[in-house]
Length: 609
Image (tube, rainbow, N blue to C red; front, side, top):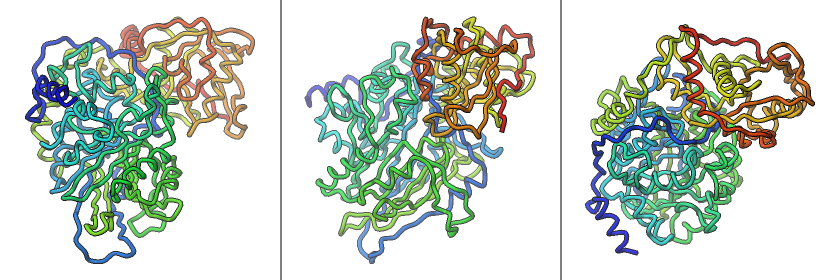
């Protein structure tokens, strides 16, 4: 086995463990990424404003009750979550923030003697074209460029026996875990991204993709073929002789928000149970300082300053998980909710666990300070701030040159495709919803899908609409940013009664209402009525009532067609026909409209109370 690993390293040109070179290549870009999946995050893109970021930057601190002066090791953890291949800067409250080169500059500036950079899942997926069209290899290359000389290719690590996998990168300064988007293209593509090998449409920027040059861990994603976790459940970081265990976990609901093909052959078990099992293994190895990278999160209630009694009020799925964690867990880096968390939350025994979440898209990072006792090997002090990566101050004024070069090459590679103009928007068309749940952009997309498939009715899930459309020239790249998943459109026969059930499932079994965007149908609903009976009236565009016994031709994307987002009635659709890719339908529809075009809220959905 050792010889195979060495041969692999030599063949890959990585025996010296230098950062992989980004080779020039003239291979053509694919016109579209292959069929993928859509999901709706716990909350939509939440690039929250100045007040939330000020609140997140208030340091939260804890010191052990039996604290005493003693020899300690200072360890710095820098956490990012939900990067989503966001190589380019974003705007937050009218100011530039994030972008890979600015983020890298901040992380390098904050690094010390013992610093561990942790990505908390969704590093890839739902990405802009300059990452997505290159199968998000640039998003992984960003972390490769941050990795120190002690980091080794993950493909090498996966060749080791399972126990050795958890010990093989103890001095590497970067570690990641899995989010739901890592499964957009299935297990095999996930493993290719991490362990290396060119995609069928590659090579892209790196001629001979070497994969991640850092470990990735996940304790609760089980390979059904082997009965073991798909990846190592945890890794150990050695800081001056003090070992820190880092356990990974993805949200157990991943199969309900990712297409079935994306999670085929995998089982997602309870996060807390899987984490606690890994805690037991780490304790048996003498590891007392334990950090969890958990791709699940919540919302933190607004507060004014660090002394407010409501400062640590957090709601959402992460709270129940924290309550059930072992007392040995010290810190949880959370994600998925695209907001902020900076709180000390108690588990069931009252142990305060430091919980962080750093917004999303590289616009912030969690700066966590740990003091670890050399005597007990446990954490005796911990604190955190959430730092916004402003591009107009501090480290943002000097973007990292290596990463900036990576981004420039990615931009140049996709430019010929993304710059093509397909239309002229008269006004901005946004995802903003009325109280009833209707949006102008949702109407435009649903119309495009209905026309492309000659259906009577179509529905678009809001989680698949990932950006707004600005006024003026509309490029292919802008439309890709809105619909980046390349789902097929699926037409099927549904009865009027099944359509009623579909609309009721917008509330049934949902963590929050998932209000579909309709075309070819108008309906009203009442919030005061019980779940399962909230839809009051349904009519077609001609005003005729939807007949429960009649059959209608309905189009949805392939994610919804497979029962995604808990719209299970769509599994019952008959006479299915697979049509064009959703993005192609939108591009063709806009090109065919009189220019300049527009879309608006039309009252397709009415809320009665």
